Image (cartoon, rainbow, N blue to C red; front, side):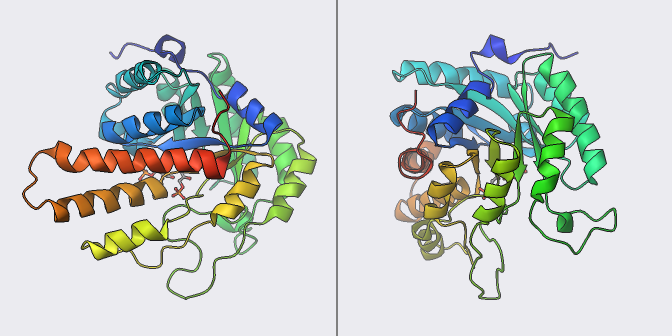
Amino acid sequence: MIHKLYYQELGLVNTTDMLQRALDEGFAVPAYNFNNMEQLQAIISGCVASKSPVILQVSDNARHYIHPVMLPHLVVGAVAMAEALGHSIPIALHLDHGGSFDLCRDCIESGFSSVMIDGSHMPLQENMTLTRRVVEFAHDFDVTVEGELAGPANIENEGRSGGSLYTQPEEVEEFVRQTGVDSLAISIGTSHGTIKFNAGTGERAPRLRFDILDEVASRVPWFPIVLHGASSASPDDVIIINQYGGRVDNAEDIPEEELRRASQTAVCKIDVDGDSRLSMTAAVRKSLVENPGALDPREYLGPTRDALAEMVKYKNEKVFGSADRV
Ligand code: G3H
Ligand code: 13P
């Protein structure tokens, strides 16, 4: 039997205070996904260097890639590393896209300070019931919960398919009230991965729907809103990947100026995974091609880690506005 471990023992915080401060001061807390030690080191270095709070985020796949038992120990190391680098920053460990109550419970009992329960593919009532169940369990352990409410076109049941892809603002109020959730991911034009929108058709990516965001914010004032699928697909990284033997077509993500603008609104958590993947892939490809004799993983993973740390620092300072907030 696995020993239960709660986040308070790991030096972590939940997301309540960091999201509240982001809301009050008009910035967004970055939530960086990671899968391995180098990514974790890079995220910590970049966030300490920019004095930013951070949400360390893992999907269920990433949790198993690392190993569920090893993960909290890796994160304890990350907290200690941040302190050793000279700045104590608030660090949360968050489950990204939790698909079931059991998964959320397992994560809460193994050191997570925040979980996402993603019922966005379900009819509204089922999504609310599941989210409420997770909230009730999580709050007993002072763990924060993020829910997700997608547009009806993402939902195949209830005869609602074919509708808008965007979150319906009128549903947000009810969702927040009925579930007691601490933050909510909504759809205003973002999507996961490095290829978004109309890949392959040559159509220009639509802008974020700030009108929907404003409507949501007026219905649930001072409530923390989350943006998923918000990577910016640095053209420089795409060029390097393609130049050094890789192949990335049609990468088109959310323009930085839109994320900068969103960060100043009710959006107080922005997720980043695709941009980290691009940054690391570009750096590792370049490094291996330029050093054909490299056999020591440190020779190519070291520069890769440095590139990601720079990207994290840049985003905190220039896009999310989370730098110098600790
Ligand atoms: O939204 C999902 C995240 O980008 C993580 O994806 O399941 O491949 O780790 P993953
Ligand atoms: P990107 O794929 O745009 O980085 O989004 C990641 C994300 O939202 C993780 O939840």
